[in-house]
Length: 230
Image (cartoon, rainbow, N blue to C red; front, side):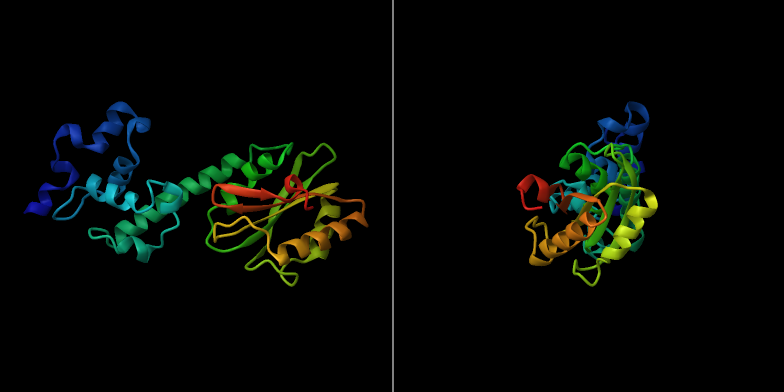
């Protein structure tokens, strides 16, 4: 009986996040209130908002970090079963994909930060490594961007010939390399440096420029060009 009293529909009007959203708009709700709408109900000791606050406290109220939690990790919180865990994961993935679509608005690369803004929605929060290439025309406008490989960044996974072949097909004159480090460190590895050098030398033979290589780690990045190590 106590558990029923903690369901959203039985709360006082001032405590109902659904009604608050309908009456005052989405922007006024806290992260916990938004998450509570997804959860719907709490457990015997907590309302959905209190449960949401507890979940968010474990990731420092960071929705990006929350999006990295697996279904099994979410299910470890008392009151979160498989259905609720899947709902949370799906909602955060929708948000990530929406952010990815907005990233496409970056049409011209004028700095390493522009490249970071373009690529972060695609690889900034992944739990595995991916290597991407951005192809540019002579005005540094983005012609195309795509994933080249998935997994550890080594010479066997980054096909130099494929990168250059695609550049010629697109009529690109410059490329930007990028990959992510799920560990959170932006420090380039020996393999990172080797593949950058290999691609740069091969590109120069075809009058193509490698403008930069970015390492993304959550909300941070390292630019080979900015650091003078390209």
